[in-house]
Image 1 (cartoon, helix red, strand yellow):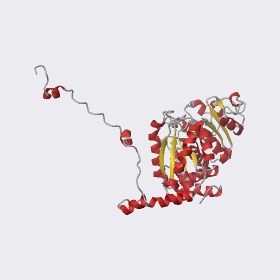
Image 2 (cartoon, rainbow, N blue to C red):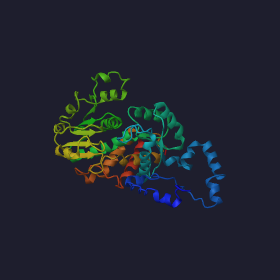
Image 3 (cartoon, rainbow, N blue to C red):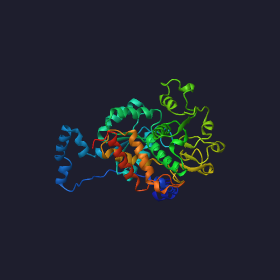
Image 4 (spheres, rainbow, N blue to C red):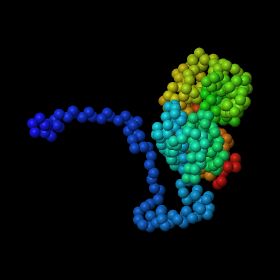
Length: 409
């Protein structure tokens, strides 16, 4: 036994354990996930169980088999949305994949419930092919009353949304596009009032022709903006650009070129911004201060890149009368949570078959109206915690669905 360590010696020779580092608050909040599933009916005894599950549930199943529309009355379908991503364009992080996207989708689901009373389920799909994405969502759709597409990269996101809406009879809404566009339009409507202008008098420049940029361009045109120029990494989107001559290569940008830039501007961002009344930033670039200085007097700047805006708010305030960002630490945050909970709550409340352009415009108008009597340069959009927001947007969207003929209630 000589030369062998007895147990007490082994313990004494072990290194002192190093305490685990303190968990950062953000990780502590996310530990175990941010949501759970809870029953909405009692399960106290055999009688409850026989109604909630077998044998009673069979009666409900049989009724739905005979009349499928009853699923909206007797299941969660009427108030539940699938939050779907493929993880290819998550926040400003890029293509980090479906697993890494799950915390964002959980967060989205929590926001749906908190701000709109809508139940939502995160679905992170391990496929990026458009055909596979569409087929997967179509096969999952029977269990949901709506589909919220999230963080799917452009230009694929346009085709995914279009094809899903063609095949499904429930609302399909790509929030990166339309949520951003709705909130931006609401803010711009109020900003125009602050500077004493009408939308029809304004010339706007959008930096970025991805999902948000395209949707913003379309909703501003529908709302009656005076003129609009879109700029991407290759310059002003215009019909004379060689790369846009073939509509099959870049169909979305080719369409934009046909409906924007009535002034016939050429060149890049500097040329587009000279004399412009409005700058909308939905890109990852930055704008030199000397270019910002060329904008028209009493300009409106909404630089929404996160975490670093294309134009820092401190610089923007030197040249603009109204400044908005995508950040929560500055006034006038363009935050999608102001739109999507109410949009879906309104659509679901009337069992809309789709979300129309009229419903999006109505959402923007209702959102702008919430603070219409409180307008100031630093308050052209409500706070996400303003309890008036979701009811106003919900009611406006439901009314618009009825006007547009897509409501089933």
